[in-house]
Image (tube, rainbow, N blue to C red; front, side, top):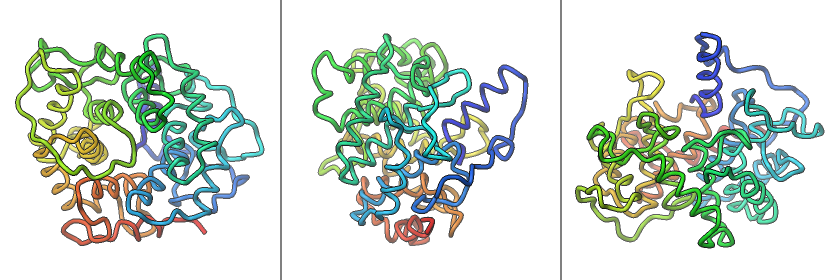
Amino acid sequence: MLTLRSTRRLVAASATAGLVLTLAGVASSASAAASNTGLFGASDPTYDGAYRQSMALLGLKAAGTALPASAVAWLSGQQCASGAFEAYRADTAVPCADPNPETFTGPDSNSTALAALALTAAGRPAAAQRAVTVLRSVQNADGGWGYTLGAASDVNSTALVLAALQAFPTTLQADGPIPRGTAYLKKAQLPCTAAPASRGALPYQPGQAANALASTQGLLGWSGSLPVSPAKTTTSLARTTCSSPAATRLAWSVNRLLVTSKGRIPSAMDAKQIDWNATATGVLALASAHTGRSGQAVAIAALGRNAAAYTGTGAAANPAATGTLIQAAVATGKNPRSFGSAKTNLVSLLLGTLQK
């Protein structure tokens, strides 16, 4: 699965040097200096180590499964002295680099936000609080966050940070980072003058076209945190108007996207491919907002028919995708141990990727 970090490197490289890079060409060999005992997944963790570890732990937490001590220890060991997280530290004896937005190196908001949530789920509140403190300290003047700490704001990163902050009551004050972060999302939201299919959606950055992953992650960060608890009641969404609250218009946009795509959101990188991650995130977002019954239903059904296409199989299964799908299953009242048409035990699949 192409991660947000590797995608951004691909985009940046293509824009500045006219290069067309394959995923295989992007990945580099991780240093053998770090022990990866306790890491989920055998693939190169250079660009997604902390992210995939966090999503895996959150998936297990959602499923009510005990978190492997080695997995928690691996993630804890990746934390920088500042409290932030890089995507992956090949040698944890070497101090973390300073963040460099131009090269996408150093600590990043996405890894730090997801790690804060995973450490909270693992009963490591002090470590989680240190990560959140860093995130609060690097909020940009426009209210958002960029991928690399201190980089220009983008909707996806802002959304993930908001999802992390939602889990910490001390960040909920009226003039705090959450209201300023949601104000950034409101500013970025496409208006009623946009094309009908894009109204209420979110772009990657203000002024750009609607983006499915930005919209689904944006709604998640706007409405709640991870893992998402199953809602006792879920409402249907009536058609919104220009005077409807911004969050309601975004929820309507995400629900519409899931329904019209039949739970198969096209990839922004290649329209012939399906972005199952955006689809699963859309389910989590609507479930967190306690709305969008029709979108949740069609999307979780599509994911159930195509689980293997999203997660992969056996030892090669993608931990981040599997952890995300477990959370989507639990949030919609499905059994993650017998999921979809193949009755897949997603929990066993995920645990099977743990490096011993």
